[in-house]
Length: 448
Ligand SMILES: *Cc1c(COP(=O)(O)O)cnc(C)c1O
Image 1 (cartoon, protein in one colour):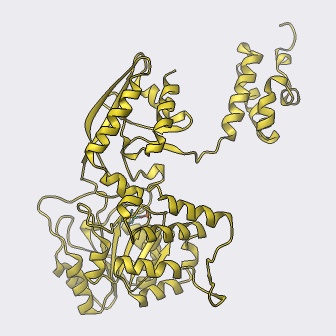
Image 2 (cartoon, helix red, strand yellow):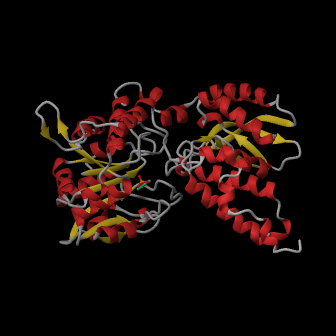
Image 3 (cartoon, protein in one colour):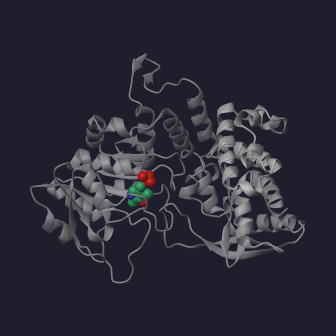
């Protein structure tokens, strides 16, 4: 150690062809490997006293392999939360995923009428299907429900007032807050009523020459309880019709079926809402998009708005949406994963959980218990409706639950579990049957 101590650290050039990294050199592009080597060399120079070549090589191999991994990797969702926003919300039906895949890989009749050879609107294939499903005259689709809200407000109410109840000034999370959405739309929010009580006459008193729309926003992620009153969409639509003012109904998740307290999409349209807006990837169970269903004249106005171009959907989304809409014609409860998972009978979930728990018990040091628990739908739907579920609580001897959870999350495939009362819990409601073997293997490797 008389020499310059940095001498023992090999150069980037030497490491790039080091035989101990042969496997990595084959798999990882040179640029990525060089970056990984540089990063590890920097770290090694800082911790000079502990330098060890084998350690360095191991760390380079690990870093390069990790750097090459795609970050949008699949995750087994064992949280039981069906619409988990951080995990991509609704998993799509097989046929919808296939449609997106086919659209992605090749050419398709996106804006082309094959019968005439003429150019057509990319909205046409979904328009009729949404209309049929919701009872609306017409429909159009944009990137998500936030975009649907912005373009509807911009088209109907830019420079004018939109009346909204103070009880419905929601924040969805991220940056969707009604007052701010109103501002970016160029419309002026006219608040009426109070947090807990808004009556029809509050809306009526606020109507003036500058009123462009009445808007109802579904309180999708909270409830106002106790001494409360709000105006039904029927009454709001009647009031709008009386004054010739359109009514916009942002139902957020919305649901095709009567589902607990979620508003059904068709009900608002039947009640006379001029435009109903809902997300494609919440309870609807399709791709991320925002569906606008309503009167033809407003749909046409929205499609003519130059802003439409900024929020239109891509070919994969439209293909997946068309396939999802097709499933709604026949047996949607069996074919749409979101609906199937939410409707999974407790007895069946318990049976699956017991069988899976028995497998886990074969692992060394593992204690397993099947318990009753509660879950939520997630994704801004049914906020206060905990529904009964069954979980498998897993305890590994000598391993803290946080370590087990971390190992599961960082394994391959990644597993997101729920932690409750110091135990890692698997809720198989959101684990596809065909993923169970993978979940077992992932658990096995996490405890080794
Ligand atoms: C979720 C939600 C939105 C936003 O929908 P995205 O599809 O996530 O953009 C808007 N309004 C309501 C009422 C919602 O619940």
